[in-house]
Amino acid sequence: MNRLTTSKGDYDLARYPENPRDQFRAWDAADEYLLQRLQGADGEGPVDLTGAVVVVGDRWGALSTVLAGHRPVQITDSYLAQRATLANLTRNGHDVDDVRLLSARDTPPDRIDVLLVRVPKSLALLEDQLHRLAPAVHPGTVVIGTGMVKEIHTSTLRLFERIIGATRTSLAVKKARLIFCTPDPDLAPAPSPWPYRYELPGDVGAVSGRTVVNHAGIFCADRLDIGTRFFLSRLPERSGRDRVVDLGCGNGVIGTAAALANPDAAVTFIDESYQAVASAEATFRANAGTEAEARFLVGDGMGDVAPGSVDLVLNNPPFHSHLATTDATARNMFHGARTALRQGGELWVVGNRHLGYHTQLRRIFGNCTTVAGDPKFVVLRAVKR
Image 1 (cartoon, rainbow, N blue to C red):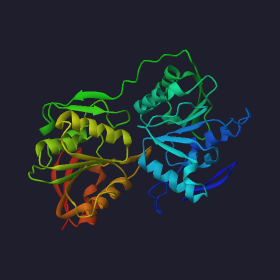
Image 2: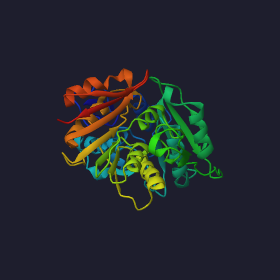
Image 3: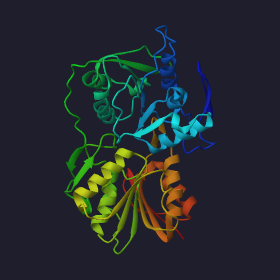
Image 4: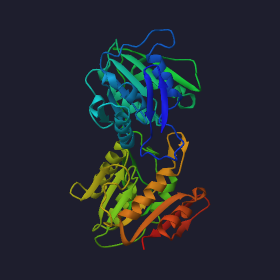
């Protein structure tokens, strides 16, 4: 936990799930810069926050917590960000109802007077969000984006300009920058291009030639990423009424492959991204049919899966948390998988060779074998004894 000092007071904030050993803060210089601008620290006067305030992409709830007195609406694609927001509100003496939580899949408010956008890593997600929000802004809406300098590119500014209106940027402060956008009611941007569909190649096992549906913000949204491709050709061959989990499912192509290869399997798709789970469901339905049975869960890893209830977990874990490289997510996934698996159940993992997942798997499961590998990737198998 760390303390954020602002002109409105001090706030104890933490990421979610909270880990005392985690050195990463729940905010950064971009959040601080935006909060300072709202209070008029740049000499232009404070921003009027008495109207409808919407905070988009608040990564760990720092912005929403500081602004909770104005009862903002928070829009995020991240389940973990929502959980962090609730925890940080409680930690700082706010009622959880002081912030209205919406996912990136929910209908945004009809009117927005102040729109605050934490620029996401995914340009596609920003594009889709701005398209969804544009009908709610009006000529008097204050629109301010924020991000670290390395997150804000010419393409970022062009999106604001094309969808919302004239755009300019601030000077950089502590390697952070602000984006100021003036809504143009005469703009008529083209419709959002999302979701995006593409056809898989013919050499990836059960899903060869099948259709993938990606909503904005999914990793490698316009093509099959090479790690997943390596995994698809090496999935376990199983039959019978297996209970399978595609953990960190992304667009769901791995779980869909397992379902097509074994129609008797019961597959559950899990991700902390609302856009990912929507993509997984769309991909599964496009290939397995509307009547096929599967579960689609937005959540924190295997937290909603009963212990000892799963036969097989398939996992391609992320190793980034926004701009930070970390193995914390993979570690949590491995622990959760072990708890959810029955005795004799298996976890199959694909990852970059240099990440050394085999060491963690041996520590958690007591065993790990290499199923396949090349100079870049390995597929690992761990069994719950």
